[in-house]
Length: 207
Image (cartoon, rainbow, N blue to C red; front, side, top):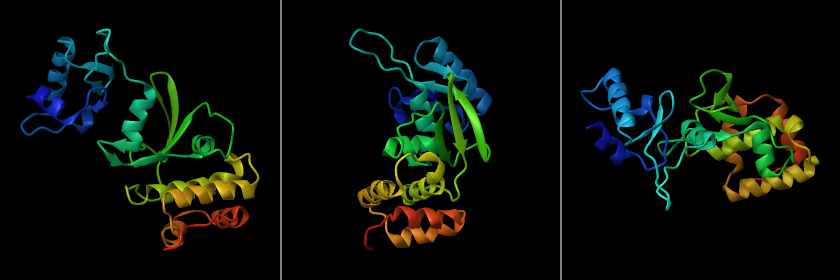
């Protein structure tokens, strides 16, 4: 029953989190037992405690392994296809081109953050996970990511503020972010964000 559930609900190479498995008539203890049986039989693989996956087989007949980045993405950014977080801080600044610094620790803002701010380790890879100002959804993720970037831009960006403004304006245009959407969430951020908006001159799309 459990294996049928897994192959019906998960792609090969997709992280399977024990806490996400809900099957009527099966307790968590029972699910753990059967996960171990499936692992022992080689049908699934264990990444680390509470995390499993159905392995992909490459052209050489070898089983693929999960990366820490894939686990972090599926656990904190897009959980079972549902948007629950976004990359932020120095990680976001680097990805957007606001900074050339590659952070030693990836930063993610997520509904699944275990605390306000928590450093976690996934297979020797370190991450800083933060709770969002507002619950992240598919509809507001890009707006909140923009606001988080503006909130921290004084410390995470290396570029001149006007160059940052052009980069963020391009970001807002790409994701169709309007002033009305931004205004909806501004009250959840510190007042210094207004200074960042003014100094960068970031512009949004027309409603």
